[in-house]
Amino acid sequence: MSNVINLVAHRKYTIESETYLQPDQRYHESKNCMQLTDGRFRELGLSPSDICRDTDSVYIAFRGISRTVSFTLDEVSSVSGFKAVFSNCKIKQVWAPRRVSLLVSADGEQWQEILKMPCPVDLSQADGTFTTYEMHTEKPYKAKYIRFVFSVDIVTVCCGLEIFGGECTCEAIEPKCNLVRIKDRGYTVPGPKLIGGARDLILMYNYLYSENENEQSWGFQDKRKLLPYVAYVDGDGNIKDTMFDSFMWLPFVRQGPSGGTYHADWRHPNKLVDWLEYRKNLFADGYNLAALDECVGDVSQALSLGDYRMKVVLCIPYPSYYQTDFGDWEGKGKVRDLSVYGERFGAVKWYIDSTLEMFYEKNYKNLDVVGFYWFEEQIFYNDPHGTRILNEIGDYLHSRDMNFIWIPFYQASGFYEAPDYGFDAVCMQPNLSFNEGFEHTVVRDTAAQAKKYGMCVEIEMADQAADLADDEYIARYNSYLKYLAETRVMTDTVHMYYQNGGPGLLYTCCNSQNPKIRAMYDDTYKFIKQEYRA
Image 1 (tube, rainbow, N blue to C red):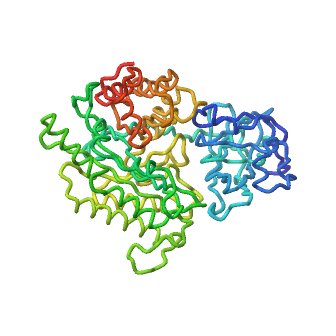
Image 2 (cartoon, rainbow, N blue to C red; image 1 turned 90 degrees about the vertical axis):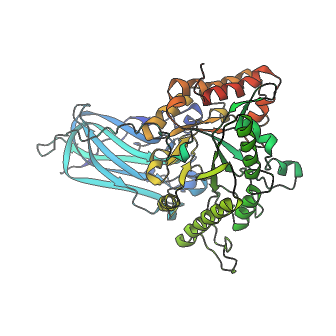
Image 3 (cartoon, one colour; image 1 turned 180 degrees about the vertical axis):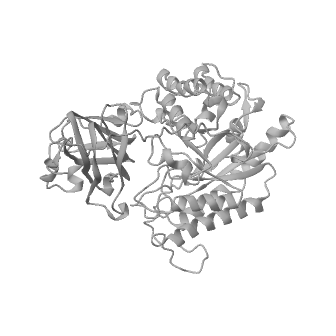
């Protein structure tokens, strides 16, 4: 096609995200609706780091799965390609999209995807660079309406966009609809093969590395602290019924003895000593798993339950690609470099095997280990080992008859693809309790996304220092129960419960003399038993 021009030069457009954005997520969105088409990206001359702050010149997208940039041309034209430029900046978690696509329509109704392009560079090597996407069709397509779609994992910065074409000619192809609507996967379905049949998992934190002895005690849970989670305890302290049917054990989100964190932090990658000290605490005599085993036995006896057992999920600390001297789990003094894939997977495999061995050697009378939890809450597509390590961990856990579980935060990178990465249960966090800027309806929106992408939903009670009697705090917690009951999450899927640690806020609610605070514990019990009514 001759006389090819940029059809969208200095043209206005609209932008939509694939999922609804909360107010706190929208502040990243630039107000100028001409940054992508003003042509300035050719002349910016800024570094990828500086350009992330120049919202008058670039478009900044934060989460939301993808953005669709839509144009309406003045008349039907021939469309033949695109060019787009994106920024990469690791320190700001800015990465070029993993895929882009171009869609066209002659009438605004029938849309055809005419071009689709994966990221042309290795994101693990792209820090501090710009990435250019350019692609052309063999023959032009007839179009008056154009959509350019790019994926958004964490932060995506688009510096400029051009759509190529010209006057409509007889050789231009009439678009034909080729988009397939993906059916909802449905909520995660509880069953005997999924987490041992668990429906309600309480997150219980153990091990807090600190020089302060009082803080250290938060990581040691005894029978007294665990009782309100194993049993429903009335206001007089009587055991009346069972409560949660499973416990997930995990470390506090703090640094370990090496200074490394248990989650992903490229500045502070953890080491073997951190994993060992965490696990030592987990298996401490009289606390945590041992205390839970005794507590379950006591509750079973009090309620005449017979052979009643509690399901247990253990935690896999994040094995950091940036740790080049992890420590030798075989004790032979070998340098273990986790930037090498075999060593990184080997560390996880050793940890799974040795942890299960320790669990079985304890011969707990009332506990069954049913799976492992991946501690990091987002997927890093700039990780050179990508999703490969997740799939192989999932495969290995399955070979040990264990489930693989993940709890991403609200719209975390990779959440919508997580069932494809080896996870058996993915439970997304609405994060209402953590974000005053979030609308209460985020719980309903999370339920809708969980149903669409095959997940379940976490229920959250956050902030150890909160005034639990505050009406807004109570309203936020009640929004979880209300919307999840209305959307059938209460009855149709698995639930996981975050409530801080040491031992947690539900313990406080159970033992409170304030009826408003105590009611949150009682309502949680009703929700677990599928009897909650707003």
